[in-house]
Length: 389
Image (cartoon, rainbow, N blue to C red; front, side, top):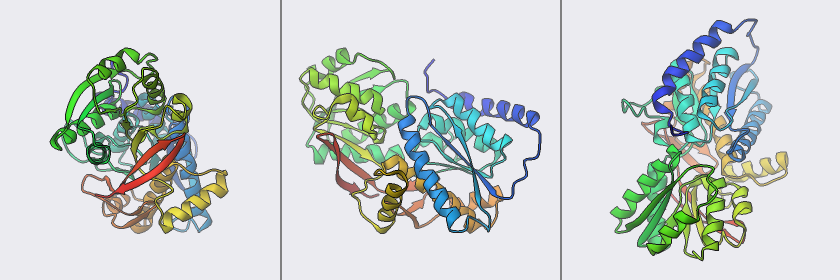
């Protein structure tokens, strides 16, 4: 069974867990504040993402409460750890909804976790804003093709990110032949790879090789050797930072000096720690945000984050921050904690002032916002450009 194949069982599991929690809950859940859930990957293989996004979220909640809260009340934040696992994501989401009685939830940076959590939100009819889950199946039911009523997201989706990556490979890096490495245990990796390949071929490029690996594999040299033999101009790897760091290191050890390109899941300082700074040279990835992409909202966020945490925020911190403000903005416009009214306000979001500029939510509840191109150079992230829709 594939580790991240979650869509088929998620809804049924969500209903079972919700029923159990409702039956087992007791005590007084009354609150003078407005309870909002925050669920992230705080432990596990993707904790680097979740921790940063949670920090951004906490900063947003702190700022909002300092400014008077929402609807005349302070926000009470209920935090849960999904551990980077779809099954734990279902449990965590069910807990904050049924036991802690939150009115809405913001969180999640891993697509498979967001897909699982959305089943609970839909079954419970609780608004859910995903921070950085890019797979289209988070907001659209793959079985019916219908947009999920209560699920939204603050980030762009892979259908745009993959096209931008393909365009950059063709025009920015001059690649005509590409080899692809796909994490076959990840919905995110497989989905982004498919979109990239389609766009790259449509732009006149050729896919000369494709190999699959599984998350937590350690020896990638046999796969890399096969791809090297195809003589590509570039290798595309839409994987997570822990695997990609090792892959880049082993590729350079095999004498593969050509450009390597990936997606937003590369964004962690641990990638360079695993690959080594020099090995990561001539590598690039598409991302949500860069502190070098200046605008007033971004400048304010960066200054506040540095003051709060003593470090520069990454893109996951920015997405966590945006997700909270997006949700609270909708609650304010709804003028109510009623779930259906908050849902309707979210769906009507236009010109939201995100950290990367004005942002809208489209008909599939996805953010329409720019994609940033990042180059890794001597261990540092270098902003290259922003490509807008």
